[in-house]
Amino acid sequence: MRNPFRYFKSSAEVIHLTVMMYLRYPLSLRQVEDLLFERGIDICHETMRFWWNRFGPMFAREIRKRRIQTRSYSHWRWHLDEVFVRIKGETHYLWRALDHEREVLEVFVTKRRDRRAALKFLKRAMKRYGRPRSIVTDRLRSYRSAMKVIGNAAGQECGRWLNNRAENSHQPFRRRERAMAKFRDMKTLQKFAATHASIHNHFNLDRHLNRRDIFKKNRAAALAEWRQLAA
Image (cartoon, rainbow, N blue to C red; front, side, top):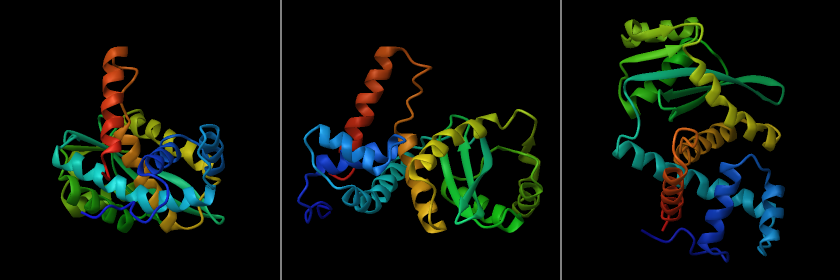
């Protein structure tokens, strides 16, 4: 495999650090530029924009491929929900699927919230991850209509608080959306949401569930694996 950083003057370590800071934390490009300058790294924010557009999806694909190969997700129960996103004054819908361990499986942007969009989203997620035993959704009728077509209507679960896991998982994306001052088009939203989901999965270490020593080992392992993604 060719070195993807061969035509860049900056080192691979600087590019890795820049992409990680921008995608992992709710920071704007100019804030990342200031933080790197404080470390003695003088990089323009427009260069950082080019870096994350070029290398962010590449890192996300590698993370997603490794998780699929090692089956780092669950077939027991999925949670589905939609996020309302405004693009140039128009409402769009970001469909999100995650398992019961809060691993984001799939994201999909549509202009409508009907059966056709729900069916396309479900087929896309099941093609990559297989069919789950049960799916928790809200009471949107598009889900039931789509699941009848797939033949999984008996596995749907609806309840007042059953889908709180999906609702809470929207918060990291919402924080990044505010830092980015919204999106310009559906393509940019799809690209960023998919990349951000993979990076969030990689560094989702369940800090509140583990002891300090276990958390530090997991964090060191995640950072070491991140540096090796495009090595």
